[in-house]
Length: 181
View (tube, rainbow, N blue to C red):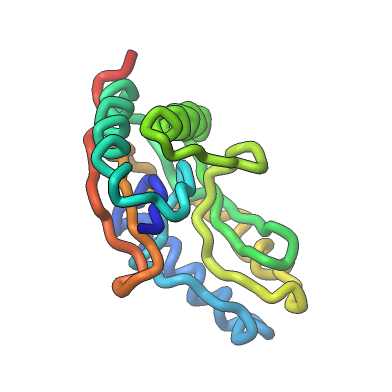
């Protein structure tokens, strides 16, 4: 199954960002973009890709242990940007360093379970809002996100999510963050 590990924002933050995204979707050219569904908005910690079903129990066990090693931390959706003209995203604020440490812990846990993570770029916590074909400039949409800041929340849970089916994203398992090291 196709899996990733993520942090899921609370409904309040999704609604706040959604109001801004609605305005961005009214900008010229927005119809050329593939906008993501609000129900699937998340901050990916590690994309695992196709994982053999036989490895899932070990992966879940390692992720449960890892979650317990990290304390809850504050986070909010803040600002935005783009990866070229291919992806428009909302950024994170608050506990960005804590999210980065958790992402590294998740990657190590996955590798210990036999699921290597081949991250090509440094970790940047982001929530993908839309995808483009490279022909529609995403600059105006990223600018529309520049000053956005959602209400903060405490990240208290790590989620293993399945993608590629209906519904598009399905939480397979989740674990509470522990008291930390």
